[in-house]
Length: 141
Image (tube, rainbow, N blue to C red):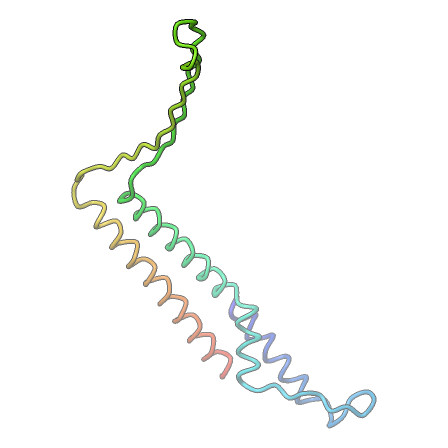
């Protein structure tokens, strides 16, 4: 994959170097700098895109692990109709409520899960950074 990206960049550099000073209509083609070549290679690299998706997955794992600390919330609404002639003013009764359920303590596995997911995200970011470094080295070579 990265070989294909590097080959594409080298081909573009070769084309830019092989073209004489002017093109059609007397316009000088833009020269590609190392930074331009690197940006083009970043766009073409599948490894960088895969690493970006892995970072998003690690973020989702963190949110899922953090969700174990949050209370579980539910909402209920009840309506009772009373057709009694004894209490004409109390025909309808409405009750709405939020119910919060929070576990007191279930061990340190939640803490370990959050810490592990945080480290997983950091690992994925470092893997992406290393892939970008290797790609830059390949482009500069």
